[in-house]
Length: 347
Image 1 (tube, rainbow, N blue to C red):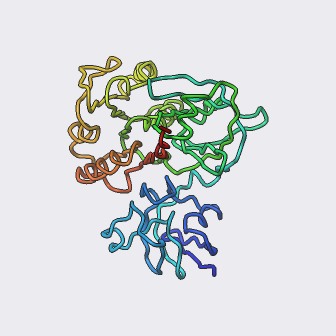
Image 2 (cartoon, one colour; image 1 turned 120 degrees about the horizontal axis):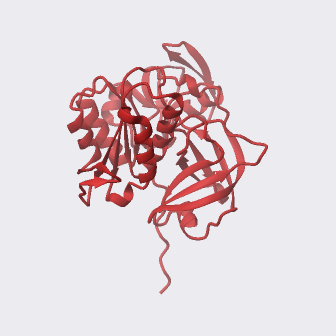
Image 3 (cartoon, rainbow, N blue to C red; image 1 turned 135 degrees about the vertical axis):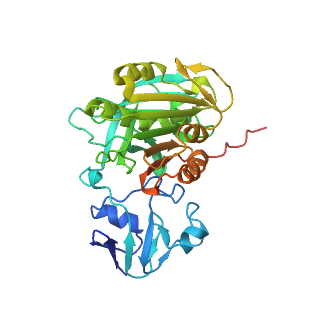
């Protein structure tokens, strides 16, 4: 049985068919809702359920707490309607006209930028172009139906290649392929662009960018896009890593800082190996979200964009909201690991 969903305050209406989630139906009918992982782990698709009931199956999604549910919130990537719904969700207008494509591509270059991070440059067929927004991601389609998601590290204007930063994950099906057998000119299939982790270019607030590990990738795409558009306000990048090697783009950082002049600040934050400076920038020790709050104890006037592993996202979100950041000015992408346990080694 199909159910009708009304989106407030825009009063848009769409239909959810049997077997669909609210998010799937919205995207199918051209409504650009915020989302990230699409498996209930990141919380990007959270919105308010004003009327009606939804089902999540046998258990509540991990990113939806009991308090959230009691407060009327829902995760639309997992929610299946039980009757007609009224919901409140932030629609992403800029993503509406982006076409998701499934395309073949070739590995144009594979460079090791750190001992556990590879930069993968993908070349589309000459007759194809992938239109995307800075911060979006694509899926690598693997045999057997598996897929792996990677953020685009380049900006839309620089689309000769699609650039991915791939961290080596023990037992990770695709990352082990990249670090083991993959060669230049290898053929892959992709689907994208996906996701709604994109810039609010209408906002006039200063921006903070907070990355953990390869969470730097979509932030780099955003920063390159802002540079191309012309920097019109201050922005500050915080990049957290275990040690200095984890800050794997020193040349880019130095070049960007020189071009941006006083409009850009960069703070590397190392959790395990302290350092006075990284790539010529004064470094901090500890956790990246603590460094942000120490530098900006009042976040009420900022927009914050962050990407990285779920523990960083969860800790940072709580700290930033406590520092006064309005929840609707926090934009984030939570990087979920797709590694599977290694198979036992024969005796």
